Structure formats: C-alpha cells, structure tokens
Amino acid sequence: MHPRRASTAIYIGSVQVGGNAPVSVQSMTKTDTRDANATIRQIRELEDCGCEIIRVAVPDNEAAIAIATIKRGINIPLIADIHFDHRLALEALAAGADGLRLNPGNIADASKVAEITKSAKERQVPIRIGVNAGSLPPSNVSDQNIPQRMVATAMRHIKLLEDLDFDLIKVSLKAFDVPTTIDAYEDISKLIPYPLHLGITEAGTQRAGVIRSATGIGTLLYLGLGDTLRVSLTTIPHEEVAAGYEILKSLGMRQRGPVLVSCPTCGRCEVDVIAIAEQVEQVLQKSQKNLRVAVMGCVVNGPGEAKEADIGIACGKGKAVLFKKGEQVAVIAETEILTRLMHEIDEL
Ligand code: SF4
Image 1 (tube, protein in one colour):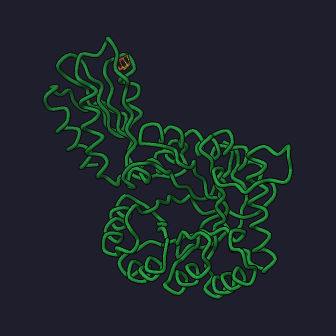
Image 2: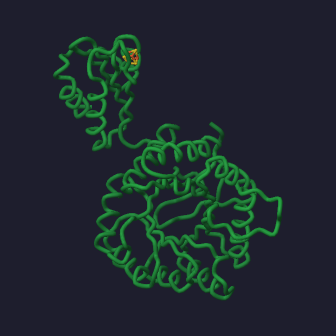
Image 3: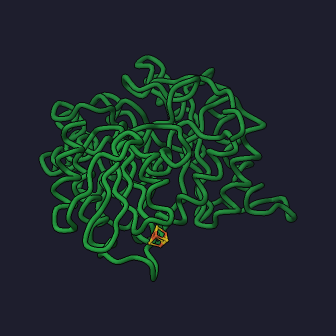
C-alpha cells in the first residue's frame, strides 16, 4: 500500500473528511427529496448499514426547503446536490445542509457564486466540486485527453472558490471508465491539497457496478488517494454502503462487521458449501462484530484458513471440524453446521 496522500481536513457536519480521518462511506438517497418522510426512512436505513454521510438531490425549491425537516429526522450529515441554480444552494444552506455538491463554474453570474460562498463560509459548510466525464464543457485545447479535460475543468471551478478566499473544498473526478478515473485523480492529487471524494460514476447494476467500483476505487485507495467514497449502483442504496465497506475492508482500511472467508468449492467438496456460506453471509450481515469467519469445503486448505479465522469450519463428508481462535474445538454433524456456527459467533 502506498502511504496516504496528505490532504486538508474539512468537516461535513460532525464527520471529518481528509487529514488523518478514516475514509468515510457515503451514499445518495433515491427517494424524491420533497417527500421528507420517505427520504428520512431511507436515510435511517442507511445509517443502520453504516452510511456516514448522505447526499440528496435538490432539483427545486420544495426539495431545498424539505432539507430542514429531513435534517430533524436523521443522525448523519447531509449534503445537498445542486446544479446551476444558486437560489437552491442558498435555500439548502438556510435549511441546514452540512455540505454542498455544486460546480461554481456552472453558475453564470459571479456575484451569485460569491453569495453562495459567503453563506457557506459563515456556516463553515464545505463545497464539493464534482466533475463528471459525461458532462464536460467543450475544451479550447485540442490535444487534451479526457482525464486532462476533467482536471482542467475542476481546476477552473476550484479557482473560482479560491479567488473568493474559500477553501472548504472537496473534489471528485468521476468517469464510467476506470483508467480515465484513475488518471484524473492521480493528476489532480498533485495539484491541490483538498480531500478527494472517490467514485466511479454510473457504474451499473449491482454485480458489474460493484466490480467496476471496487477496481477503480480500490486502485486509488491502494495508491494512497481518497478521503471519502461513494459506490454508485443502480440498486437499493444500502448495497452502495455495503460495497463501500467491503472495498475498505479488503484493503485493511476500515473494520465494520465480520469478514467472511469462504472457499470456491471444487470436486473435493462433499457438503453444500455454497448454501452454507450464503446462509452464514446473510446472518453475518446483521452483525457489527469485527470477526473473521471461515467456511471451507475440505481438509486441503480448510483447516489452514479456518485456523486463521476467529471462528471457522473445515467440512468433511457429513461433518465439519470447528475451529475457534486457531484451536480445533469440536467435530460437528453437517446438519448442525449453521446453528453451531451462529451460536459460536454470538458467544464471541
Ligand atoms: Fe476445494 Fe477444499 Fe479448496 Fe474448498 S478448500 S476449494 S473444497 S480444495
């Protein structure tokens, strides 16, 4: 792992982003923000999954006003996502938004940008400049590639804020294409001190989107880049949060809930490890314990992995060996595997 890039620290409500803060996990609601009750319900579910910062779309004034009600019903900081209309930004700030996602260069009038930054500064509310490869303005420089255009666009937005003496800035440079995203983040990380929000935009549905996001976000994190992340998926938002934590857990950067080690099974396997592992995973999703649980199919690699885990089983024909903290503690019948494993996990 490369050392983490030093970045300035900002606060989205109570959550520090940048500096030495752990990489935080964000999501975005998929409800109509104007429906405050539905939005609160979804955010509360996301809080239970570990979401640390939530973003809501603010397409009109009614949505901006709803932020005040939403804020009263939730426990995590809220970012208002705004495009083009400076009045929505001012309204969202007045309603108590903890952060804005807004590209100042898309607001035509400089005095309106100044109004937003003045209000954000008074409230110490950071602004994320979020550049997406799909909506880049035309470039005057003919030989610029997409990452270069993304960086140039972000730098233009950043300068508008810096010229107003505003530095509570966070930046994202998202593309669907993973190498483009990585190049863009690498390039901008050398130019600015601000924290980076990582993501692969429009990454897709759950299966492909998680892999695409893990490849892009995981590579950037490995390179030491990134202070907060959102996995964007075309599915229910708590999958975004779960995927975010899995990426961070894979790199040893965050702990949240158990890690399941399970073998892929092969011709040596004599029990239904796929079914057992799926059931164990379902149960583990509800646990907050930082445990390593192993479900292994046979005696070849099974005991080794199971021994490394806090709790593990290595299956054999009609039975399994149960390991706890590296020690073999019991041999159990195949029919008892799930109940016994769950019991042991509860005990730990
Ligand atoms: Fe096959 Fe055993 Fe390895 Fe599982 S642990 S993949 S059953 S060799």
